[in-house]
Every structure is written in structure tokens, then in C-alpha cells.
Length: 132
Image (cartoon, rainbow, N blue to C red):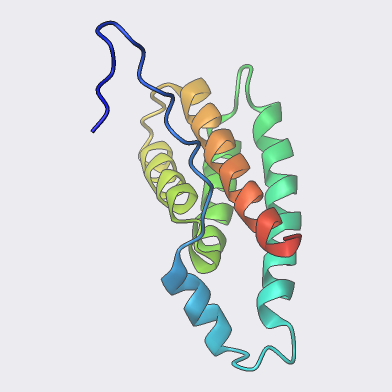
């Protein structure tokens, strides 16, 4: 076992590869078990298109955002992201939507940044699946 010299910096952690939930992907594959109809790829492509559009909307809300718009985007993405296995995005959407719908604005700029970050991760994972 090799020991590090005192004061040596630990190596940086390996970058985490964005992933989609295996269970959600398995449920999608059940819709087209032999893959003949390309259901999984069509669903992923549709999600990617929708997510790109929603990320543009969110980015527009960075400065002086409208809580109603952010809640609406979060609501739209909540279910679709869960269905493709982007569970971190889905959870962020659910939490932010719930709080905004309850009238608790909180830090809207931080919410927008969180959704953008989770959305970009989901976009990377879907892109990796569509274009291996």
C-alpha cells in the first residue's frame, strides 16, 4: 500500500458521468421489448427537444425571474424527466414547484440555477444515450 507524503494533495475525484435511472429505462424498454419500433430512442429524442426548450426558458428567468414561469417549467419537466430516468432533475422540479405553488418564493435565482444545472446533466446523459 502506497502512502502519500505529508501535505500532498489528494487526486481530484473522477468526474461523475451523468446517468439515467436503470429502472426507468427498463420500464421504457418494456414498451418495445425487441426495440423494433425504436420507442426508447424516440422518447429520448422528444425529451431532449423539450428539455432544450425548457432550459432556454429557464435561462431567461435568471435575472428578475417570474415565479409562475419557473413553477410552470418545473411542473412540465417533473414527470417527463422521471419517465426517462433523470431522477435528480425530477426531484429538483418537484421541490421547487411545490414551494413556488405554496407561495414561498425563496431564492428564485438559486432555484433557476439548480434547475439549469440538473437539466444540463440530464441533457448530457440523454445525449450520451442518443449519440454514443
